[in-house]
Image (cartoon, rainbow over all chains, first blue to last red):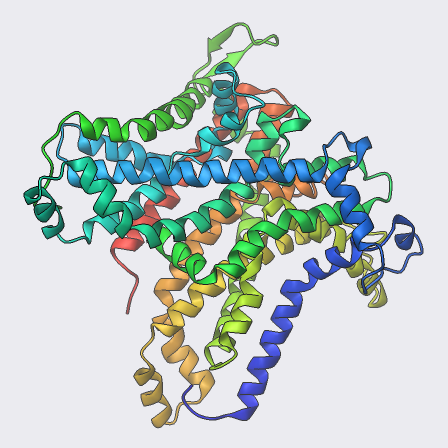
Length: 282
Length: 292
């Protein structure tokens, strides 16, 4: 702040409070709706304050779900989402850190080509090659499986670049010292590189967990068996099914549950989240 | 470049193997297939296919539906970008003035980043629901009859708001970082010379923020074009009357629902060219920053 202007400060507060309210509005409305019964919406006026049916609605959704929509209980869908998000986040970190290690610490023929192959994945998001990718996964018999949900999304140019950047800034003396002490490349990787990149891995994990949890199009395509539905993809099926019937309170309860884990991660690990966000864009 | 390296020849390939295998099987091969299929036409049963050259592309470029989709995508991407960047910049400037409360405000503003696009769509669909939503009720008071199920404009507004809302937190964080990187001495010097807050913003802050702004411009356009599939599918499904049928949604719809593989593949190829050019622009920027 350069000079003290109480008027400007008050205006800044006003802007921010307004921003917080507008940004928070959807969450509030969804939460309020999830604590009422279906009949509360019929009167025509929307409730703006929470009702008394919170526990009832949430336990109904978590344990049984809406049977008419063909979706399993929400607890099951959340478990599927958790498995998918963890597999994607850990898988991406694991294969990217070894790739970056190979590219930075070794010289071998076609090294440049390998680097470019990984780089190209940046330009091929699932959305632009849906049909052929689906055909490959179907051909491999991976439909309706956790492998099908996660493995095709695991390749990561961003994560590889991030670790490459981290390794490039590490002093050369580390390798020399390890060499003199008789450590081979894998020992160097395990005992020196991995511990030194721990914070980067944690920051990246936060971003990738959110990325994995929020996948929508891919789970929608590869799961037809309701036992493998993820919550983000399942909620749409639920909303479609109840569109005729006024069951919005249950859909909103599911929406709140779908937001809870990733939002908790962002708020609980804000510092790591911001670090990850900034680093993955470099 | 490292001066000291390991000399193994087989080990690096083993380390790269998982990443390269997944890249080939699930990225490069399907992309190649998309390119191949874009030059083929399959018969109604999907058994035989024949080489048709550029026919699929020609059919696309002369189809009013595809032209409409291009236009819708452009309007959508530009609106989302302007709306989310505008709001985020305003909030970032306000937070930049705060000393003690900056952290609390930041926490309360960044969480929508974690909300899935599809869930964001569902939330705003509910808020704008013509029969039970909050907003149509409010809009009715001022005399506006909101209905995104029949009105093309309302449908577009709905998907723009839902998509922009989700992106505000991302833009906000980068703008705040950009503002903090501007040396305070510059603004102080301007203040001593008698420049007021508004003048300082336009003459110093905004020009010095241009690298961040340009970077976010590209990121937001990419986001609006490729990451908003969930928003569209959860709300309007491209309707009414194709009013929100953005290119990414059309590829999916023509390929999976319409089973028109050739046309869908040709659309994929066009989208790939778009992503490639946007990525090139983005990487160019990383090397040579836009600065004064």
